[in-house]
Amino acid sequence: MDSITLDVICRLAFNMHNTDVHNEDSLFRKMVVDFMRQTSDPILRIIGYFPFLKKFLSILFHLFGNANLLKTISKKLDNEISKYYMEKLKNNQHQKHDDRKINILDFMIEQQQLGNLNELQLIGNSLVILLAGYETTSTSLTFTFYLLAKHIEWQNKLREEILKNFNNSDDYCQFDQYRSELLDRIWFESLRLYPPVISFITRRLDTGVDKCYINSLDLNITKEMTIMVPTWPIHHDEEYWPQPNQFDPNRNDLPIPGGNVMEKNPAFLAFGNGPRNCIGSNLALSESRAVLVALIKHYRFELIDDQKSEKFTSIDPNSGLLKLSCPNVIIRPEKDIWLRVTKI
Ligand code: HEM
Image (cartoon, rainbow, N blue to C red; front, side):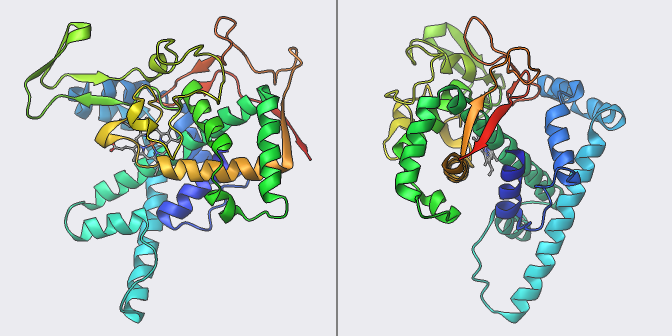
């Protein structure tokens, strides 16, 4: 899942078509994955909690933290961006109108030329898009395949529907356009049960109003106070989601595309909400549709049920959900998820 989602974001956002991320020993993939997986970097965490200590802590981060890894990834992005920029300049000399589709990088380069972004901000934003764009989607797909392996009846239903629509085709572009309410329900319910990003929806009251009183909590939010919306508890609150620990793609209030449920149901927070919500939700949805169709069509996914096997996944006995950890802002299963995959 890491390989495919990293490949997609590199191609779509940065025009990087020749990455070797599908190779087991890909250095680029290793760097990016290591950075995301191993950075429960305490220094970065403390910067998050005490932003006013940023200057001092960033020196420590450079000395003892993961700064080198971050620098190497940024350097690679910087090279790719320069290469793309030079190619663009060369092409523009030959053709008056550049009619290629605009990608995120084109947009950022345009903003840099208008003076709205400096070079450091361009690299910084690219880094955010690379990191935000791959692990979130990769994690959500991992949970979806786990849930389909656990609830084999839903996997069979989905395969039946896919085979009906794509029996003679393996056209991935068509998969991306594929609209199946069943598939979307499965993906959104998986995002509801295991929302990948759980501690990132933060807001600060810093413009216009001085304070804001929340009646139901008897709480005053004052100027410059930062609040975090608790995604996990809301996604598992019986009041909003009956039998919250059950995987039930038939739920009424899932914000599947087509309806207006996102507006109607603010209790679904996998992509945040409001003007600063996720900019990549549609990309993640298209990508996930294509991956699910391509794999479920050709492979059967099953849990490894031998409890003695080290590949057995660990479950919380109270909730029946996977035991999780959250090293940065993205949840991870405490033990890797191993599934048995059989070609059909
Ligand atoms: C299943 C996949 C994804 C999940 C669960 C997810 C989740 C989130 C969440 C919860 C937020 C915070 C929203 C808020 O504060 O209201 C966010 C923001 C963001 N996401 Fe995603 N995301 C996903 C995929 C992507 C992709 C593919 C991209 C890349 C294009 C992306 C780029 C971003 C960016 C740049 C922000 C910051 C937006 C801002 O601050 O204005 N995300 N995402």
